[in-house]
Length: 144
Ligand SMILES: [Cu+2]
Image (cartoon, rainbow, N blue to C red; front, side):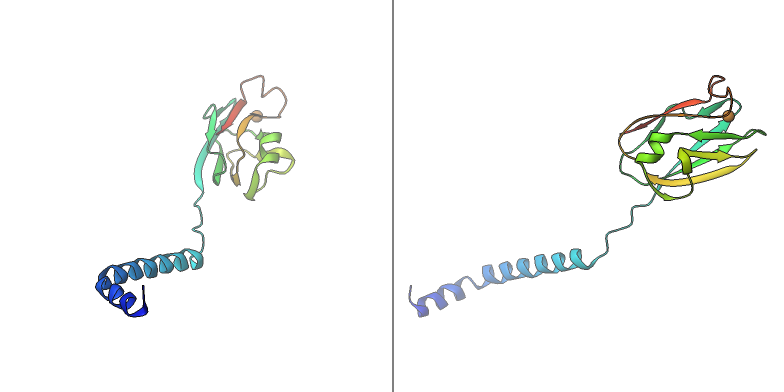
């Protein structure tokens, strides 16, 4: 094909070429937009865990793996308790709050929150106060 016939060929397909260049431009634009737009912050889901003498709810606690979640522990009793889950807290990425030593301490009627990203697995939880676990303060955390 000589240059002259190439030009007349292209002119004959001007509409097609314009459409193609429009597609290319919008693809480039959306790529540029995707590159410059910050990754949307994933909002933390919420999960309330009720604590009382002597139990936890829900039972089991079900969480989504890799998804930020704020666990809010609500101690409804007039006694101190804790939520001890060593492996769960150790393998989770803690974003906010305190779960030092793998437990959340709760004074009488205290509410505390911990925001974390849990890792898939099944974990045990209990209250470490003397005989509370045997009285019913044991739970399971299922992350999947
Ligand atoms: Cu307890």
